[in-house]
Length: 238
Image (tube, rainbow, N blue to C red; front, side, top):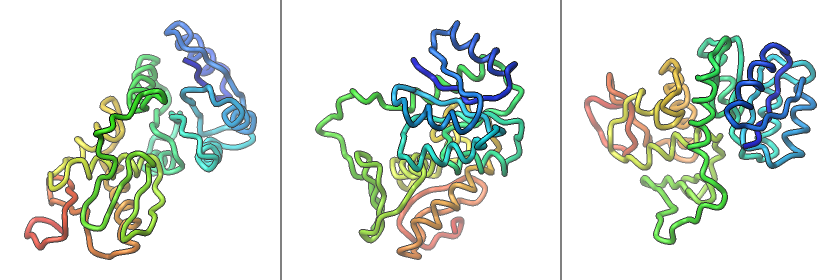
């Protein structure tokens, strides 16, 4: 499996390339954001990108946004020394799929890579003809074939993380989902993050899906988590 590592610290590059090479990965390295972006755009064979945030040229946030703007669907694992919830949310909101705070153990990096690759459906996997491509709730629809969402027939632009979150909610309609359940299913079971990130992304989704209809579909169940259902008055939800 070919991976792209965009990292400017020689010591970190050495540890990652040696460890991942021994694990059977083929690792290409870019020492700055500008060259890393060009390598990512010009080489579709990379199966995953490991991206540092603090980079010369272009920082990792800018690189990640540019990759997503070019509609590359490759998983991106972000590395940074900044581990606050705000920094994590900024990285994920730029289009990253996972976030690993330095210093980290190589075993955890490998686990994150495996988790990201499990989420990624192989291109050559046949789609069963009996699969239900459309998930819906009231006037909200999510097409799992085209990865597109709409409400009242109007398109909703979602990031990769917002898409996975909405898909998980719609696959579990009228079911209370805890923040930990959502973290495990949307971000990966090995993903260790403050559960406030779930609240942040729920708010992102609410703003987007309520843009064309103010009727609430994603409900907070106080003290328990969230559920998606038709709007009904309920004492313990809002």
